[in-house]
Image 1 (cartoon, helix red, strand yellow):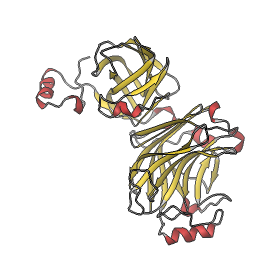
Image 2 (image 1 turned 90 degrees about the vertical axis):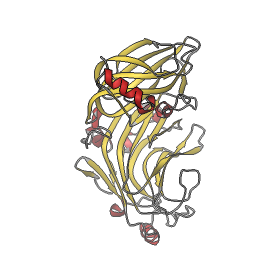
Image 3 (image 1 turned 135 degrees about the vertical axis):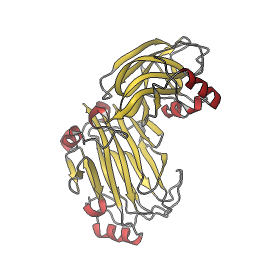
Image 4 (image 1 turned 135 degrees about the horizontal axis):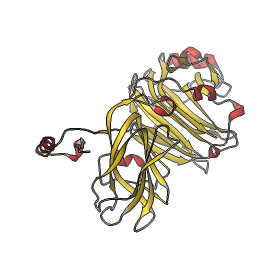
Length: 396
């Protein structure tokens, strides 16, 4: 099928674009994935394949390593354009797979790269309805490394409500997956279900636990269903709308490990904790970041981006049998994490009782009245998390 590749960075010359328009009508357009993940990487992260630069790359060593794109909605996938690192010196061997649910895959292309070049080259596919695109690498003619510098995914039509049990940004507000409601049936602070959304309001729920550092409103896996992370696959993805007073700090998703504490926490914070993109307290700019505990028990923190109150961002948390990947705001972080005999996912609104200037706790653990006084002293009067277009998968 004849087509034009509508990617602005590929056509810097208006004259060239007009010439192409003269010869062909538009039949497919590039779609921007809402997230990208991979089986592993060597420090050259998956997000590099979407940054518009042929100087950066994703790399992973070994047969069967893969990189995966979530389109956010279901489209008719027409073709891919892939650029290979050192593609003019060696020939890569890949499969291209498509899926509607990220668990059952259809291989639509298999073989070696068609052209010896470092530029983007075309992979024509049989038109297939899919939400997820995966490229599986089997090394190259020189070694077992898989390295891609850029990937463009071309689709026809407009995206429909996400597949795979609940959708993800860009296809309207889809229904809450029943699997999530049946799995996460241990709620604290009352049911958050409001139509097709989950709405967590910690200031209204005022739920307190003995060891908690603030009010919470949450959903979590009940104790009887908790398993080691390295024995399960689990995916939670949703559009998160955060309404939070200046100076506020909350956790919106986390993994807990029996006897170890937290394995992962995703924060939204308007404090001056160092190491993030803004790190300025009470200015209305909220750092979004993740803390993860590696297999040695060391907790590391990684910035993901910034938002303002009222903004919506897409968050993806994927546990691939102990390899944890967190993606938001165009940034992806991956780590093999410490596991226990009873790990579990929990999410919602965990409003921290802290001074935004210095991050010192201003309440007493388990003391609801002290939390109320703390929030009042720093004018924290709004704290709502709204989750929509939710995807949830769990394989034991």
